[in-house]
Structures are given as C-alpha cells and as structure tokens.
Length: 247
Image (cartoon, rainbow, N blue to C red; front, top):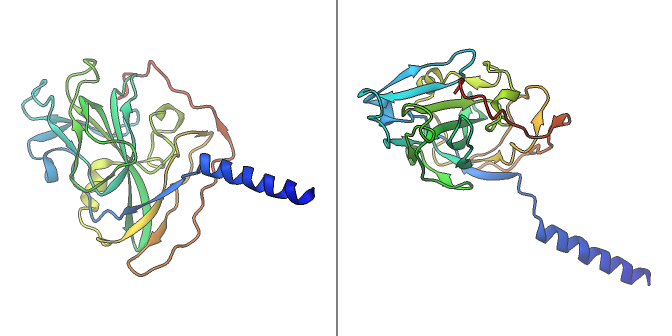
C-alpha cells in the first residue's frame, strides 16, 4: 500500500512540474556595445528635448523637424538583448517596449533594462531575442496625449517595469542614458552569451534593490550559481493611472 502511495505522489508531482514550468532565466547574447535609439547609430536628425531630471529619469527624443514630423519614425534597440515587455501600458506610457541587456563592465557581467515608450507601433514581441539596431517600434504620441517623441530610459533596477512611482528616480535605479551610451559604444564579449533573470516585474520591493546579478557564459566557461529568489518584502503590483506629467 505504501508503495502505491509513493508512486501516485511522484506522478502527481511530475504532472505539476510539466504543467507549470518555472522560467526565471534565459540565455542571451552579450551586448557588444550600445547605440542611440533613434537615427542609429549616433541619433542623426534627432535631439533631446528633455534630459535626465529629478522627476524625469530618462530622455525625450524629437526629430529636428519639430511637431509631429517624427511620428512613425523608427525606434531601435540600443544593443543585443531580450524583450521582457512589449504591450500597451496605457496611462502616461502608451505602447512600451522594455529590452534586457547583459554586458561586460571591467570583466564582470552587468544587466540593464532599456525602455522605449509612447510608441505608435510595437514591432517586437515578449520573449524575443533581438540584435543591436533591430527596430522595436515607431515614434508615437501615446494615443494623442503628447506631441510625437520617444521617451527613453536605461534602468539599473530590473524590478521597475512600468511602475516607476514605486522607486526613487535617482542614479541608484537609473543611468543617465546619454552618458551611459557614450561610455559603452564598444564592448568586449561579442559572440558570447550570459544568463539573465526575467519575470522581475511581478512584485514591487518596498525599497530599491541592487541590480540583479548574472551568470556569465564565456565561449569556453561553465555556468556558475545563479540567484533567482524574489524580494522578501513586497507589495501588490499597482500603478498610478494619473501620473502623466512626468513622462
């Protein structure tokens, strides 16, 4: 009788594991450098109408023609990466794409998210591996809320997602996009891959978290330990639907 109980329990456990696989990390190519998100690679024909401020932790990119002359212009991934978010977030965001990148900094792997918001069209899907310079969407107006422009951010904190109001808008959680790209135009690691964490937008930590670590896969290196534990202190995912002035 005990033997039957053992085998029935084992089969049930196996069925649950097959039905609900936990996918918390994926392998993606290392970024070999970063370009500008418009007018690639050097933003030719565009300018930043608003930069990194205490209430605006990113850059707004506009075409030099002004007004809505840049509506529908292409927006590109700044580097090799993995699409972790691609959908209409509504509110002050509109259509948003978030791409996760891993790169080498002083020989150590680092991970960032690049954000492309207010898009007119989204041209990639979640779970897609994309190379540097691939078009991810087109410049939009957030469904007519703004004059056409691209809102662009680079995040150190991989938990932010679209719930930006839950985190300080400071250099603990964000990079200054222009400065970051200028300092990372060309990087080592071309042809190598690394593991990145995914599914990090489900819970919101009560305090800013350190950037998630990655396990590096060089061309001839083996896998190392990879932490996937969620934050201990969290609250339910919530957004401010009326925070439109700060985008």
